[in-house]
Image 1 (tube, one colour):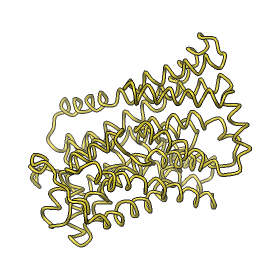
Image 2 (tube, rainbow, N blue to C red):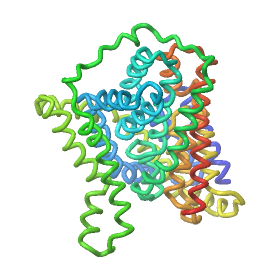
Image 3 (cartoon, rainbow, N blue to C red):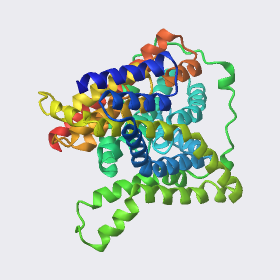
Image 4 (cartoon, rainbow, N blue to C red):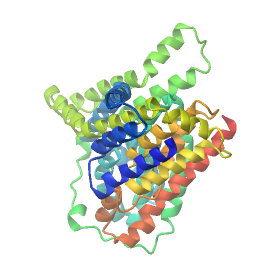
Length: 438
């Protein structure tokens, strides 16, 4: 029975990653082979499906993720992140520091991978808490909620970008809908929830507090930093918005579609960042190119993991599991948005990795998307929301938060894990609300 084979495949994936500590890429390839053979496919056909799945998935995403990593690296190394953080906090003042942290996390989180954004921004949290006298959790959790939500919901992050490709969703619409859903999730999970945690007392290691901030004259201006960081989002979202008002066969829509293509938007943004965050800061072209090479090296394994998930998806389709799942899903009495959220949440809690949870869910859910009338963009967001569910001891993000803030496991669960749970559930509710009108 195909459903049983898929369930056993997912359990095998959990065993390989969680128990045997095997890398997610190798685990996905092994599971793809096992599921394909169990479905009666010849081994040579399974290998062909794996090759096809990896190639079709990475063809588009390798450029998206590569350019995205380069952009984030340029903004971080060029001082743009520091400028955005300091300017927003100074503008909002002590009373509204949480809202400044939300905006900082959101702006920085869009072009930058979560772990990089965490390491770069957490020293600002310590510095701001010391300067204002406010509790660390009160200051830090809103920013980390923003970082987490952008990582789970919004392209060009690896998980959402890959799911957009697999579901054949529109990246621009996904961005627009994702921002609508992200706002209440961040406010409830980051701002309001952090105000209930007065009893948690962080005790961060001393060496985390001893951070030297760059001098004001050494970093770029606020507006140029903000413009550089948000440029790809602006181009992609603008193209999607104008597509509703411009004539479909006009030259204008052709130009807008070209500029708003995610690959072109990110390429153009990287070229702009090379100047604004590199050359204009007195760096040599050789040094800037070295930074870009380092950025690409840092995402090599992420690309392989995404390719492995694409291979798993292709085996499910070619082996006939996809058609079976599609027929089974059409008989469901509840929204497929809830189904994909539940699958992603279950895998996330079991595996820890949001990216792997989202991609594995996409491989399972892809076959029945075409048989439903649900927006593929909302399916992306529901899957992404599920991947943020209850981060705990098997998630590196859990330990980063615990160690940087100097908490015990109980307090980390009561703060970090519950924050992730809130943004996941609120995200699902937001998607279901959008589904009424879209």
